[in-house]
Amino acid sequence: MGGAFAKLKSPFKHRRELQKLKKRLIESIKHKSSSSHKTFRSTNSIIMRFPQFKEGLQNIKHIFEKYDEDSNGTIDHEELKKCLSILQFNLEEKEIDQLYHYCDMNEHNGIQYHEFIVLLCLAYLLAGSSFATHKNGSEQIEATFNMLVEAFAFFDKNGDGKLEKKDFVLALNETSFRNKSPSHIARRRFREMDWNKDGMVNFKEFLYSMIKWIGMETDDDQEILRHIEIW
Image (cartoon, rainbow, N blue to C red; front, side, top):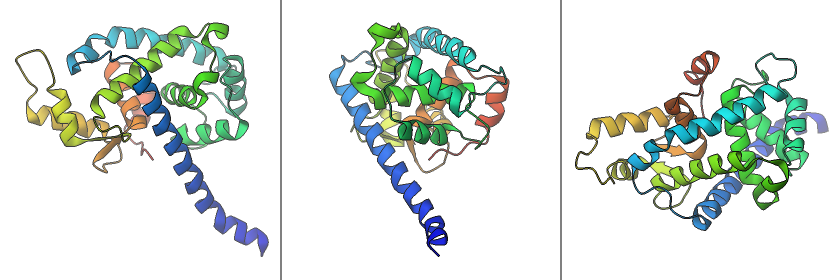
């Protein structure tokens, strides 16, 4: 009887833990964006940084390949724990477990490259000041993730951790150039980001979209990204 009850209870517990994780991530994004200088003043300024984004994400690809010890294109749970430990992401094992299951979009098949980018960025946000880049030589990782947070914050005008369509369209046209994006293009871009079609874009969806736009996904990633559902 107790075991059956535990099984019934676990989905609710899982949802509670997921909500806590999402709340912590939103608070971390708020803290990071409020404590940094405003790098981006327009959408164009974000696009101009795409080469820097790509260079930073390429560095993460090297990390992924290093810790994919069996070279099967995925990082399993043990490989992930080893990776985060060596990179000095000071997270509890429970947090690593949550991130692993949270970012393994096709479930139980391990963390693929595009998932690893997202997971590493979320781990960076959770680790906060305990992530010691001066000790592990990960300054470029930190700079890349900070730029991604700042890019998200540029569109997230009210700082609630979600992008709404109207705010995104307005932000897309905050530019020093005379030509503004046609409304249908702005709406299409928003639809591309809104993976789960709930009318809002969270940070996780934003990261996956940035990976796609920057051109960092592999052929396997492209197939998976067509079928994912976020949160």
